Length: 411
Picture (tube, rainbow, N blue to C red):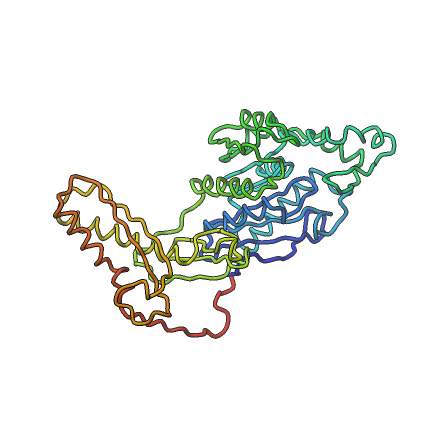
């Protein structure tokens, strides 16, 4: 499978080549998603990147692309409209259907959210739809051109400033926007719907989310984006929205089959999303490792030593639970807190070299339940015998070999 995000082009609804990116998980793909960006934005806005990252970490591949005339896509923006955006989404779904698998999840930001509501009926495989800061009707966009409306009506077209850039907005474009009505379409959606909106959104008011949510039938959900702005320009807002979408979609997308064998192999590869960020595939489970910003990472996941402590901690509590269960002891809950540090050997007893440093792991146990002092002491001794603990104390030989050719097979 491809590593990280892959850039490519596919034919849009009007024949132009549309610039796209497919973010793929490091392991097996359980479903595909299609993302539609906001009006005059592009596939690489922060919200789109974070959403693709969060979904890929859960085994969902995400196709995001620039609409006709935007970003790196061919065509003229002046010749595009809401209907052509919808058809571009259908073309993107067709591409996925032919090359991989049709999208199960549709996600749209701002006018892209309105577009996925309109496109869903034309993509039968889509089981779920997500809107983020979306207008309830395409015509809502027209109110942003009020100051230029007279010029547009008089001359047939005007250059309108949008987010610091000028775009040609024609009279026919506005008329086309106002011709679309979704009030009858949304109740017939027949897909699980997640509506996300910021109450203080100054571009698209929260009333739009209310209209979409009320018009839709169950299953439907609403999540407030608190004080986020319309473009989710703050990284924490973009990450939150992405995490919510990924968690919500879990319920409606197919699960990977559970293997009856015990997986032992772990695959780790660079994610392509951050300088140090890594995708981890452990059996059917997907994890992310990174480093904190202080050392050049993006803090997208725990660092390698945190995973090491996690392995020791999990093995410790599992071992205590198995032992207490076998002995029928009243252990209600076991908890272990771990920390790691490099310390000078001169600070330790029985150290051979005062110049070197050694790894020091501190492990603190908390045992809940009506256990006797003798039982608590015995469980403390059993903690020292957990398999990962014994591995760390034993002589470990690590052999590294270089594989020939690509390590990731093409799909």
